[in-house]
Length: 144
Image 1 (cartoon, rainbow, N blue to C red):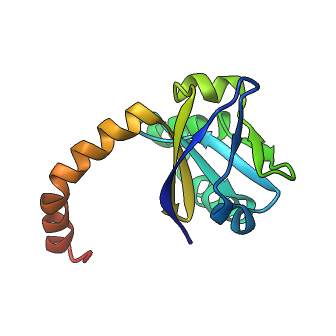
Image 2 (cartoon, one colour):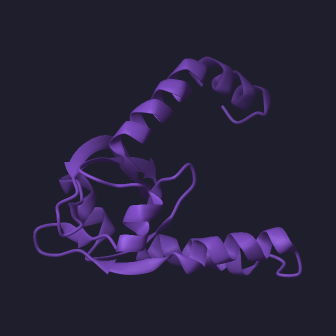
């Protein structure tokens, strides 16, 4: 399971080190794609197969389904993780998530997320203030 928050540096060559705790679990090849809230999502190949399978089962006669599939698959790319645990983040994904200098890598159970550090701090502050209400909503829906 991928958990935790790590601050790493995106170097001038657009290489980013995965947290040591993630490297073994994620393997030597991963999938990077656009996430939501202006972050990037990192999936293991196995998890990406599950996600892509579910997306492929969506009714393609619905415009929203086609659009979301284009969004996810169109920006997805397989990335090699080198011996030092670094991956090369493609320019279009760096621009998509506005990555520069310090970035936050967040473990979210079955995926990791890459955030611009300042955007992550702002998002986290909002969610922390709403945590009680979010828990209440999830509890009312029978989720917790």
